[in-house]
Length: 355
Image 1 (spheres, one colour):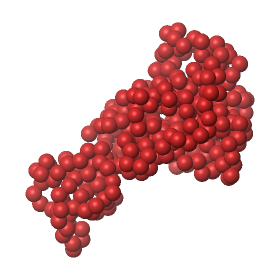
Image 2 (image 1 turned 90 degrees about the horizontal axis):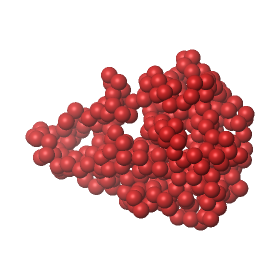
Image 3 (image 1 turned 90 degrees about the vertical axis):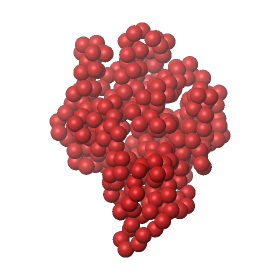
Image 4 (image 1 turned 60 degrees about the vertical axis):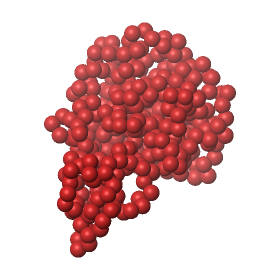
């Protein structure tokens, strides 16, 4: 299985950005380790400031695609009432080096979302410089999440997830955190009828090295957006639509200040994400593991996403096996469905070529 939509290298993104924004409005806010430009742009002229950045992890492109759709709407004259109330600074792709080779990390193999305090990487420096100069009231930290998450215990796949990051180790509900919680409740209320049991919440252990935690501690109401998995939507085209809706809902309620109606208690009622899923479970398998031969086993496979000829190749990797896995498969197959008659030679963590 492959996806051409999940790969968004800088050369393609930047050509689309130049087509969407007026000449001279696309700013170079810094350069990556490999000296690729990091672009930013400002839309709107309102009194409330929102800073949005996407793809600080290079293999998380769905939210960047959402930004392109939103910019298309702004260019078409839609949602002008938002732009009257908000000034929005957008960094569509913070990690162009990682995006080019489709990896979480930057070219120095650093996770930029663990570099908030050290500021050891040029991409981190660029983001913090924009934060310091722009002085946002709100921040949207846009990410993509793996297919392993359920929205609550034995819940449906977590298609969207959110977090109001902690500002301190006590995880106190500061004014900034409360605003973020209220906005997340507004998003959840707007989408829950079409994403029933598919919206999750991350736990809020404080880590000052994470950008969201740092910015919250500095007084900006920061929201983590995670674009996840909709049933069998490995291109994430359905997730893309809901991601766009979630971002636009957040911008709308900030512009109108409608979020003030909601409470922290409502935020905490959103189910917490749990690691419940694997991509494929194959039942009735005879497994050869070293000198052992085990019958009637269930084999759990998780896709590894690999860049191959400008597409993303999904390679199934064995993660575990057993008779009672306690996991849910996005797809469940019987060994008879695969026309395999011999035992499967199994090794945890290795690619398995059975399809």
